[in-house]
Image (cartoon, rainbow, N blue to C red; front, side, top):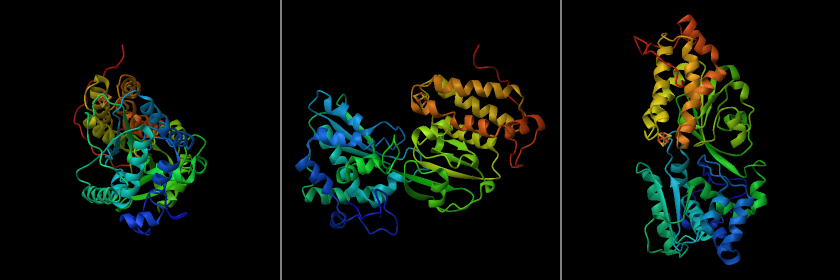
Length: 398
Ligand code: SF4
């Protein structure tokens, strides 16, 4: 499929324009779809996707092929594919970039998924703000329909209660590569547990610049990812790299040689999540950073579960007190209790991950907390008080 060694899923400025159908086809586009439909059964495609070790690239990390197999086996005539191109974390530029610059590969991946699971309808949802991506996909879809690459599937049933395969847009865009290259070749560029590559949105907050997108094989070290993204900073010139977006964990420079893969990243307290990496300048106070993240996450909680709805806001409140030099040593124990209580009492992944910023800030920069509490000063001299009084903070658990 696409030009050798040029790109896999991510189109970059120096790559040729793949948006027109003729251009995409000249790069080998839709060859995977033709190969699949002419030569392979749906079960063979699913087995290839399983063998490729393609995992949910939206952050869930579940093997995509296993998810497809469940939908394939469901005893229902009407099945659906849903492509999630929403970028729930607005720091991620992956979905908007794929839609705008590589729409046919997204469509080809969706049709391959539909063929594999037996779906006659597919939906793509995205942000209405992504006008460039929406226009590109609509144009591409029109071209694919005119070329009979995609059929018109009349709706016969509602979406509800029907077997549905929901996949992230990047996951689906990788499927044509698996069909073209074969599962073993695709898996060969990742690790023993995750095949293929990941698109990452890298923000360097020490410089005022747009984020950089890179596509790297799973297993690439965080240090190499920063290098490929053009972030050239000595270890002592950065405070932390935050891996995983809004719910990601902050890691010190001493962990820059950690390989980027689901388990390795989770072992150090961060997550793959939406594939966002942020470089924090050395002047960052990590208590203030955890406070701001908790404030954001408290607003994002849907409020269904009490531990998530109230717990994250209480964490924010305690951190506000510490930042304002009103903290007491007992606050640290209460924060630890919340760090367990919120994930354990939450229904969905949001609550499970919501305390990662707090936990990693405390784990790797405990001196920032003690300096604020014991010496009543900010370790980086950057914090301004946000409270004039402290709330009485009681232990969460009896
Ligand atoms: S854990 Fe999920 S479902 Fe529960 S309140 Fe938080 S966001 Fe809502």
